[in-house]
Image 1 (cartoon, one colour):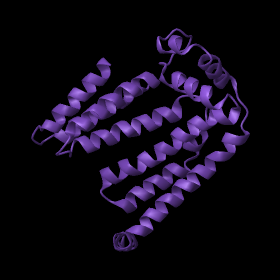
Image 2 (cartoon, helix red, strand yellow):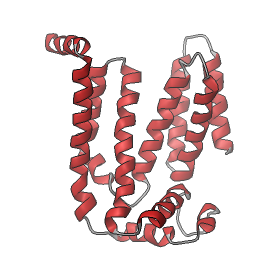
Image 3 (cartoon, helix red, strand yellow):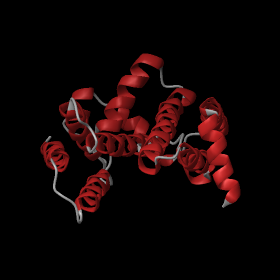
Length: 225
């Protein structure tokens, strides 16, 4: 316990040290994910993604394809590959980019929740080194995108609940996050449930605030979209 308190004291006294540590962990996380991006062959589920992304964009957006999941990921990878090509490394690089963004967002979410940059750094380190996250970071499927959207949606809610000015901006972003998550994967509805749990926990035993009302409105609008 004393060692942890000492580390926190050092972190507060030298904020640049935390910034360097965060960048280092992000770099390590990226390096750990690169070998799969460069060397892993395409497998069956990913071939299915490739087949779908080659469909006309209009068909994808209208759901005219054989797949259980919604179309956002397939539409984005369609656009991405139309710009950068269809090489295997390109296909995996889109998920790698989303996975890296998810790590950055996890740092921001952990800092908002813990109010402790050292604790947030620990959470980031666990995620960056987690074999499960490393494995799925380069799949030519929607998992990395869904992770990034889920963390982005949670971060917008955490910012909304303490926003004093321009709350409409965070409300709009929360609605878009909910809608984008639901359009990416059927598990995206779990993200909606997560936001609902946060709203209930935040309001439990406290006064209902305008932030709670805005959050509920944003979730409703996102689902409507």
